[in-house]
Image (tube, rainbow, N blue to C red; front, side, top):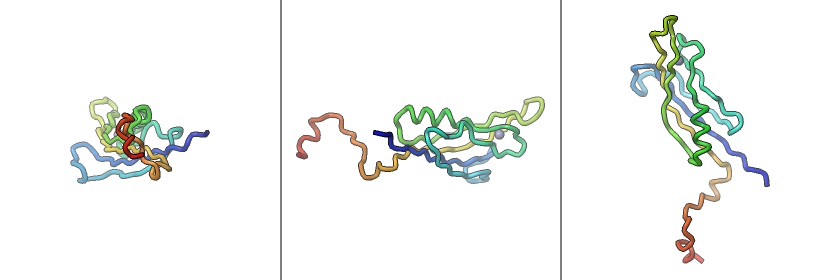
Length: 122
Ligand SMILES: [Zn+2]
């Protein structure tokens, strides 16, 4: 039996430093990927920030390993944005990772592990 495909829906909003949610949104994106081609990092939108980004790959890997279906959290870009490295980018993303099994809707996961609970149904 081949494994059913699993998709990962990645949604994120990027804000600059000292900005409250919604006051200025640099980027709002949604991406669908799989456990085999998800991005290691998301690009930073700060025009002053060269090669900065958000290390989302580790978070996706740990979600996949944990067996949970979704995770929401934030990541900060700590890339230095000037030559003497005293100023850091500090753009933040608020992300949501959702694992989707395409055929799961018709067959919800069975939670009960104690067999004595479900015997009365049959
Ligand atoms: Zn950055």
